[in-house]
Image 1 (cartoon, rainbow, N blue to C red):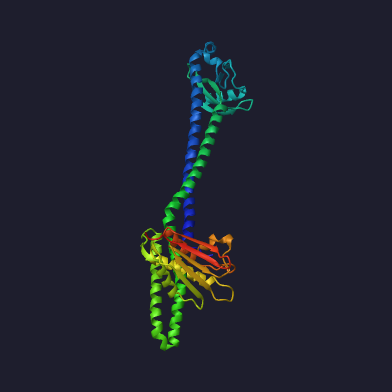
Image 2: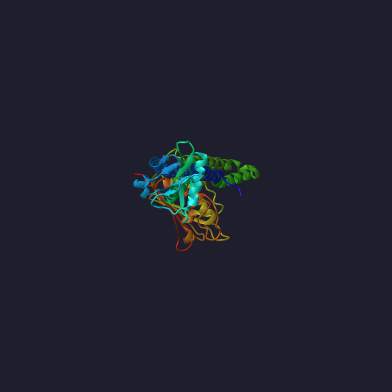
Length: 420
């Protein structure tokens, strides 16, 4: 299926939205990863800082006399009854008995604590890491080694902190960051779609106006071109009638020029470039001129007109009347019969009545859409004529209505503003 230029622009809008959303989503993912990583590190630093405060305080309370470690001052400090809990443990040589704080905030396997103390003594560095308590809770452990006067590391103070509260806080932060980024991606996607729509809207409107102009040009010139061709062929076959046919040919060519001018004006008005060329016009005379210049092909066209002056753009109104008449001649007739059309003009109102199958009331409003026609009781013909008439009526502040006659046929009523 061939896509129009406007369709391709709309597809471009979707592509722009996807690219914009993907770029922002990538940035938000990186931001979320950095935020989560930084929060994890800050949480560890907070726990390690608390553990270091405990181990350094305990180290100031222990005393070494020769090869003996004295922990008698430790129970007197308030740390012994608070969390985090701690233990003073010997290194690989077990040079002194272990000491555990009074309060066991987290049940721990002594072998885990002893193993970390021995690793700290062997390395001579402060060690920290995550372990699991005997009840399955995640804990953070820090071990700070100490030495006697000989300079040899003989033991370490091991402090244990429950990591579950910090882990819960971190998990909530992760949910907030991930949820916020997801909402931001959705909001940015919608915003990008709206912005891209605003960006390409003028181009889409211009392309659609161009397509409408081409379609309306083809529609409006179809009848005059056919009539001009018929006149030319008649003149070729009958040289003696050329003098009679030539004025009609000139008038028809002038009408075609007027149609083209009207289409250009229509396009410029739709684009907001020009304004309607309003002027007082005798509507009855304008309609009579359109009827005289329209080839009827044997159809019966009657006109009843009363003098009425309207304030309109004559070129556009002439087109609208011509389209109503052309629609009645084409589709306002019974099968295998010539069309019968009656036009009445009075009080700024133009009524075009035919004797065709009428308009289905269920789709009466749809006949004014592009590529639909009136009196389409069974043929469903397509065109632009009535949509142009409705646009002309609305542009002048008037109305266009359709309804069925009591006996047969459709009646189209065009109402225009009367000149003061």
